[in-house]
Length: 111
Image 1 (tube, rainbow, N blue to C red):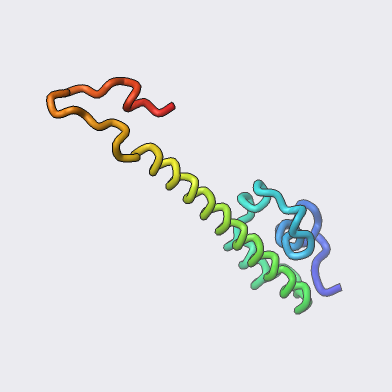
Image 2: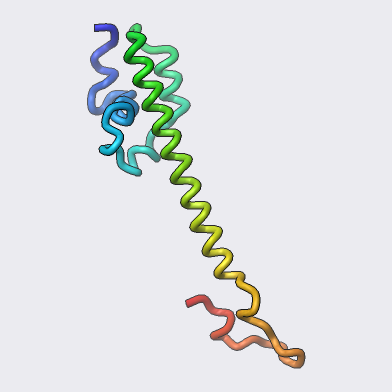
């Protein structure tokens, strides 16, 4: 075996990375958010014990998949926030008459 067995255990430092490389569907959003990509890359580049080339390539694939999922989640969050901002600041909802100084409560409150 070309790696220390404790690296890929369920609580090991690269377990989520290996899971992303081999069983992408079992990866949850919480697992993706809790994975530190920088630290995982450091562990792959400078492992405690030598890693086989195939294992290191699989782990790099897992890092790429996790990074891709993080980017997708960020894009969806930003798109959702942008859509909410566009609805909140939609022109014409709180237009005042020329002689009015205060807008009605219902016209400026989000529902």
